[in-house]
Length: 116
Length: 115
Image 1 (cartoon, one colour):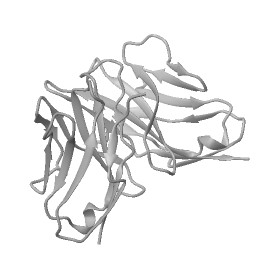
Image 2 (tube, rainbow over the protein chains, first blue to last red; image 1 turned 180 degrees about the horizontal axis):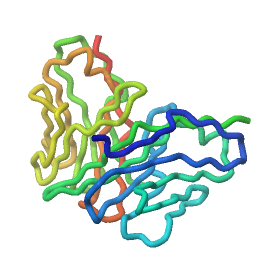
Image 3 (tube, chains in turn orange, blue; image 1 turned 60 degrees about the horizontal axis):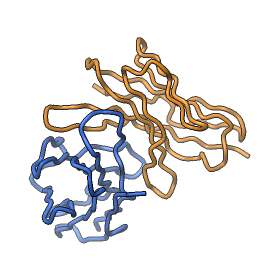
Image 4 (cartoon, helix red, strand yellow; image 1 turned 120 degrees about the vertical axis):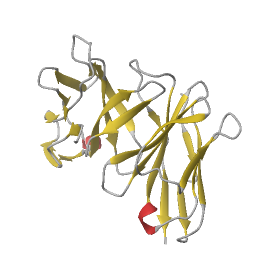
């Protein structure tokens, strides 16, 4: 079963507008972490924002915020005031912790295109 | 700012040849990972490594793959006999600890092309 779902394969947004990228997850763990990464066309993975399952407030990092709805198991990324440089693939990921290690499970990604 | 470095950035190899992808994780990190991303597809977990041994591996990580930390700084992924379907971007990542609010720090990736 897919653990991270990103239902929007592609999104368009006008420059300077806000956009929400959806992410839902599936876990039976009480403690988990959710992450968003940006992958520009150059290929590197850039960490954007983190939300812990016990965090009471939604995470924010500059123009990025996370709309965390624990009961719905969703962790949507909101980008405010979009810029042309925001055009990239965006991946939602969840950390799974095991006895001796951990893993980051990635969703399929959303390709965001910012229009001038 | 400390970073994960990977070499080479691009490797072209003939089918059936062995390749070694190299990574230098951040120096005080304890957990290391390899991920694979076939062009245009999702990022897939291959293996995690802690305390000089594999802590977890995926179904993709079969007998053709191996990892090693030969000298305390490098972390390598070896593919013994490459297949066309091994063509992908390979990412190395590291974390300082297990759990907590720390993200995985990724290298810039090695693009492997098998011809």
